[in-house]
Image (cartoon, rainbow, N blue to C red; front, side):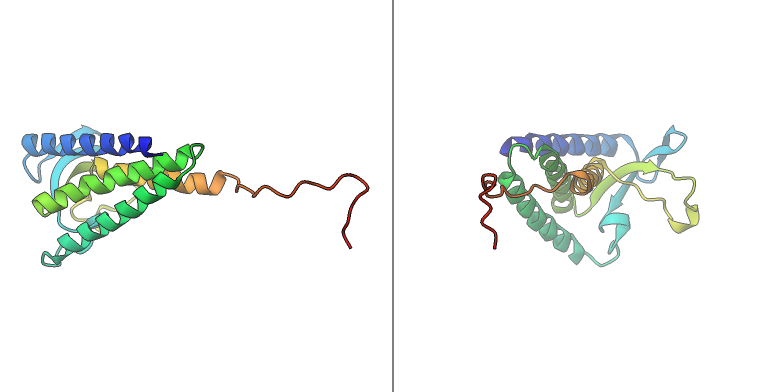
Length: 175
């Protein structure tokens, strides 16, 4: 299933290209309205999701980098062991791998992750987040991969092991 790693590579390239394009085009903190509930804004996140541990002092950079490396290694090993018919799981793993590596590159090279997409959800009070969180293509790929994985796990029937051949009619040897 290693051929699914092309999807990971695509996510990494798209993620890095969009981050550098935004980095070159938008000043930090500037909000560019694209649609009524969609903005572009350049933000730097030294933490994890929703800036978790962003104010930790710098050590979190290497913790999150190490975590991304371990998770990526586990997911690549899992991906390589999948059977050819497990396409949905392969796609999910490839998306997560690409997203993890995309953010890992930022974290190692820059010390922070570049975020730039803001989606305003009108039913969530603005007071909960200040500033409103931003994310990137890598985060989107991770989220999409997790959703595909959950849906696949919940709605794909479990594969049953092949049972022993049924005994011929009339020759039932059960006690």
